[in-house]
Length: 507
Image 1 (cartoon, rainbow, N blue to C red):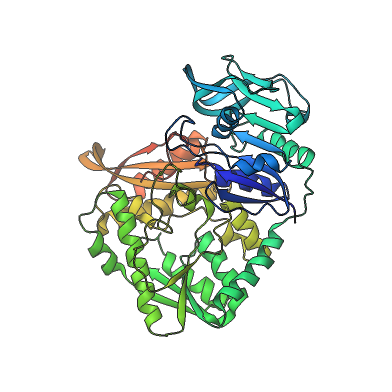
Image 2 (image 1 turned 90 degrees about the vertical axis):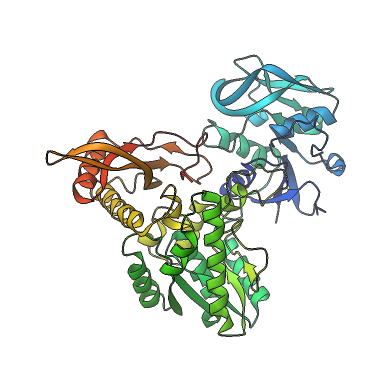
């Protein structure tokens, strides 16, 4: 099977780049620069972006052997700088730095820019720039600041671009990737998620064998798909454990038990751990500490369940690509954004082996896989919910009172979005209970109640996101219902920050 090989130089978007290529029906594989790499069946190579300067002492270098393979090469951002430096060009830190949306001038419409307009918007993130080209290189694009944004060495099939075509903010990004993968690398579009399902089931059977596995089932998209996939592979050797830690949405524990025990027939154990988790979180305000505490307690609960049967050897997690990337687990140079419960929150010493069947997939791919597994859409298309639950949506110290307030606010918010037809239109929506209190008037009496922030974003994979333009009349209805139906909430604000610069969750 032909594939595109992506060398990861530490970009936050490396796995997103791999996903974009898989969307084209072409298999892609991400490798680290220091890895021993097999080039069998490789039809093209992409060098990702990264946070470093090519002149830094410990900067990652391009593997020498790729230039002897006679394969098309595409360098992106840092990959462009690394190519230019390696091939005799010059890179400098310019006074004009480009971040975010930037207008690009396409100077050459053949090959990489085939059927793409002369001017369009791309997503930039750089301070260094190529100021002198390698030998035989030709400029194919510049920015409106007259900075070189792309070059080509035609006889060597080498291309380099300064911007990120893989992010949704770059116009015609998918067209450029398709031009490179299909037209330049000549790879046929034959790979699909059905292939992934079949290969993953075989892999799970080989790894688990006759041993048993347990999975933490939250009822969210990732854990639901992971549970059904594992059940399809090993049947009754899978035990699903639902941990009611008190940090879930209103009535969620009852709903999960009903759906997965009755509908799917999973061996489901419900553990009431509310008091245990809240005691551990008492007085904790730092979000990273919250994640680590919850991650460790989750594993301890699973281990305690596994002790009951010595054959339980594997702990299955619904880790997906975006979890891995943001926790900087995919490459030693990747800049760390935050620890994820499914990745960095795990304790160092464990008695169970970790199995992550969805690790290579993004959220929308997980949903598509779920459809192949016949999971009902009302489960698959629930909005994403974080592993640490409401703990990272209660800013500051967590108390039972604050959790109850947030659960009811969340219920009103989501219910209203569904009633107005907006739940399906946004990628994710949730409220955040802030530690702020403001003065108000309730029934002619002074009040001093909490400020709640509403968040709603539009995205495809969660790596980048825009705030959702929910109509004012819908937001007004949500605000009115919350302040009338939920005690101790006196003011509602709406978050209009995109990702980047913010993350989707507040903590």
